[in-house]
Length: 245
Figure (cartoon, rainbow, N blue to C red):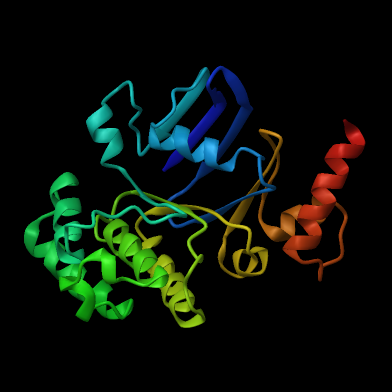
């Protein structure tokens, strides 16, 4: 679904990403893991088309920005770490705007909205304006706006910020359903949750992919015991990279 091939990129004349390659297949939730400044946000911005690569190729469901910018952008939706909402639009109007932007059938949009709002406990808030939303409600609003589009690729950046434990559980259940027909790339620092719910992981360090695979595969790579956590694996990956540099 998502193919990143030898991507070199950055911003303001500074190269941040160095020849990175990875993929996210249909049916997968892949965790993008890295320290602050590792290049996660820069990678996401390149995939979203907000930054232009210095070289390399990014393809979503067979499309690139060069082949068809319009089709490419309609194949990806995004849940940012910090909610971005229009204060003069209700949540329902936000959802309808997303439906029009992604050419979602109005009847299908209504069906998805009703179900997702119920799952996220936001049914009463559909007629509300963002100015009265709590931090958690604002995050839920962004989640609803992204999920109703049902794009082939969903990108999620630190989705659990501001959510209570019940909302996190509901969101992860929705991710499990969403990925049956699509692919999800999730950046998060909460490694315990990522370990339980991600199918594979991509480790970024200083703009380089230093490892990728399932937790079991990564334990084998770094010769760790079967009970080593994702946190243990990541710490060893960083230590191994620094020893070899």
